[in-house]
Image (cartoon, one colour):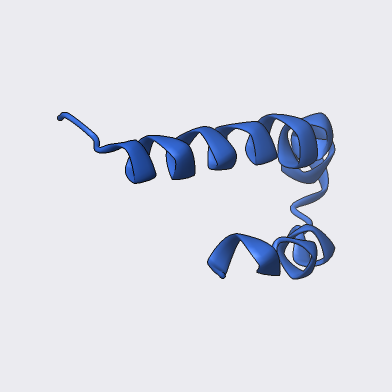
Length: 48
């Protein structure tokens, strides 16, 4: 699939957010079955 410039920017932004905000605590959440509610609240700006 070929992405346009805007789509590529969104993809990179989401990749960076996931790597920096979600991945560091993913193993803990997998063990405890916690839902990343705060991380999702903090990510509201991604939808603008």
